Amino acid sequence: MPTKREIPESEGVFFITFTNYQWRPLIAICNGYDIVYNWFDYLKDQGHYILGYVIMPNHVHVLIAFKNCNKSLNTIVGNGKRFMAYAIVSRLQEMKQDILLSELSGAVSGKEKERNKKHEIWEPSFDWKECRNNVFILQKLNYIHDNPCKGKWSLVNAPYEYQHSSAGFYITGHHTTYAVLNYFELGDIDLTKL
Image (cartoon, rainbow, N blue to C red):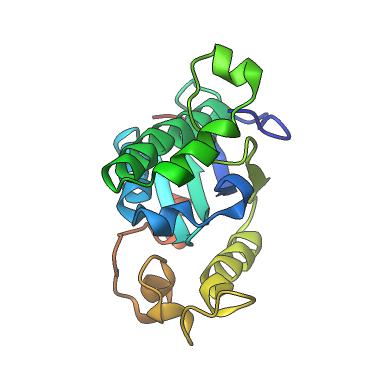
């Protein structure tokens, strides 16, 4: 999956954002939060660390500490988006969301169709920012955790109330739906080696 810019580093802490096609709430429609958690599990199995996240109805913000695994970080994120897309399509098919699936199929460009792509689930690019210090990490965590409380969403009154977020852990000290690594613990981890 393309990105606006290539991530030049092969390890480090990155704030990653990716969005459903045309900002449609596809994650919510198919109750696909577990699909994103499965990707997080895969990343952990590969030696990476999830430091913080929020899974919104139509987008994901995540702070990931990538260990050097001799793979492009763009490839890692792109492959994750692709496998999550397969799972979302499968769930939409089970739900018989035929009209929506037809629209998502019609959005695939001719070039992508030649590569056997069948549905447009995500916006083609993803955004990233490298987080080189704890001040920047904390800034991004606060942004992530406030997401469900602000703007058009207003899903909860307080960040720790949102189930699909690491806010509960950072505010109360207890993991909610998904366990993350506290960013303070990164000081003891060498990200240059798997």
